[in-house]
Image 1 (tube, rainbow, N blue to C red):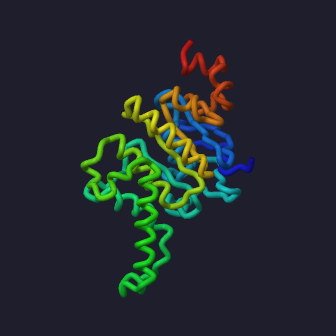
Image 2 (image 1 turned 60 degrees about the vertical axis):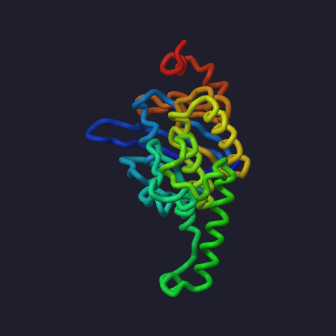
Image 3 (image 1 turned 90 degrees about the vertical axis):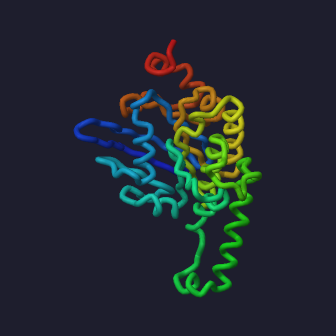
Length: 252
């Protein structure tokens, strides 16, 4: 299995506090890779570093063997990395379909002149964008909401909609920040199946999540953080039986 994301010696300091310190790990292409740890362990900071929201104080991040430290989130998206957020970034004054189409704009090849003159290439691109967005809404289980205002959708449906929008740019890897937060048991079970479907498409999934049943059930490998440092890394079975993890996080 080839390495898609390579993190080496990664650190981030805020006002003298090490939010992430000396972190190194690899994510293989096609894996479901989960990051767990107590509140304040540095999970979201790690996501923000990988996706270009923060610049590391120190260390390297590679995507497909390319050094990507210093690149903006849109530049990383162009290279195949997209994410969702702990606090959903949905445009509530737009329809569900329009939200997903927003995620597709990176793949549209129209120039300024094409846009101004409404040339056939633009119209064709918009129609293809719409068609793909509808396909993705069906894929994530939101097909009935195509023309629905986002503000009228349930919380669980909005969570799936955000995943559809992330998938709209044809990513190689999608990072999901606590996608099960606020979901009930039925919705979480549906999310688990959706993440498996995404991975089955050959898309790498990196997941930050507190729901231990969910991550233990779907992960190929897991990283455990504690106070910004790596506490453990391995398969779910290895993590489940790691005495340091049991003591620090899972509880005895």
